Length: 345
Image (tube, rainbow, N blue to C red):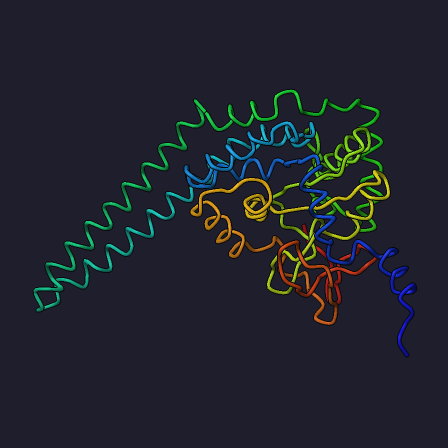
């Protein structure tokens, strides 16, 4: 028997966060929302190519009046900037070692070849290619080293946000939020519970994600504005994750909580996805920049521990905006599906 249309509407209204956002809702978000970047998203800029990074920063400068940065995320950005730069340097060194190993393999091949073409021409061409690759890697490594002393990217980011940055919370407010975070983490309520085993040192650990989320809720409510949050976190306490460790969509609990408190729409994007959506909805970007973001999004795995077993029988109907329907990894109650073991952090 066919269900009445009214009953179907009630069902969708009650569980709206579990349904794909309509184009009308997305249009409202992209036109009116406060746009928030967390520390991981801002630090992601250091890992892009120079041309793409500059194109993205140019885009953000064109909408800077809509940007806002929670104090917690600004703090984490400054604390982790040097670590991110050092991490990129390690990647360049590792890539250089791989190139050296390939060079050694070719060197072992050529002496035993009687064919002069292999022995001379191919070897010479390969050596030229290897030298170019090594020079490029060394240049990038040195450029990142210089960022530790003189960082124009940090200066551009600081200018982007200007005074649109949250203030430090009072100690009693921070204590209240930490107590609430502990309660939420025990119930696996997002965001932040994946960090519950981090040492409680400095401001925010293991509560950084939740502290920042509280600021987003408070600021959006005060301004009576919808919000888009951009993050490079790819963990189950922010996202539904499929069995291929790919981001599917924001956790419905986050959408529901924001709309219950603020009364406005909310959505979450990975940084790479935000770049692609911005190209369509805000300002056209160079094709190379869009392609780089698309490739990174395609190959970026979610940070799911090996012993988090995703339930094949659990399906999510919530595709990422602009993406395809995929299978989810969490139950409607907030706790990740764990048929065989507990989460490790």
